[in-house]
Image 1: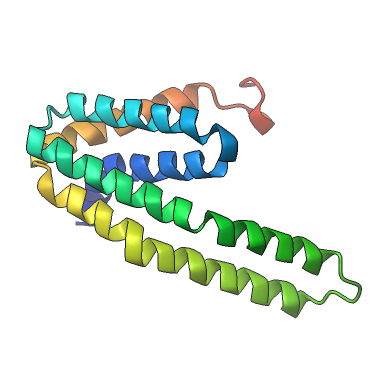
Image 2: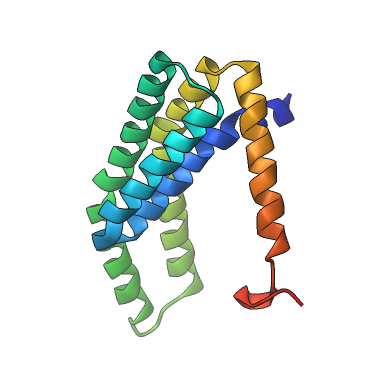
Length: 157
């Protein structure tokens, strides 16, 4: 059962990863958004999505990207606060622990309220055959990635 759920969510998860990458790249996000759009379109073509499915996938993609972008300013402030904490004399492990716990809670809240519902929506509208095609593509991509795996980002040994 868990394997089925994971396979079904792989395609939608690619959306989230791409959206997160777009958010993380800041000023270059417009180029990254083009890349996200390209990847999503390729996935839609691969599974031969219907026009209705394409519209719903696009809607979910936009909702995820919007949620990530909406919190960008808060994350910038959080980063500045973290740097200030690290450069404060007398830093304690508990202060760092509290900062990490707060950050994880924010991430989980974002996932629970915005990202996971969109992934479930996409998963539930796809057929078993479409999910199987996404799973095969994910495995192909994993295999391709593993061929180029090297230590510390270097060439394979």
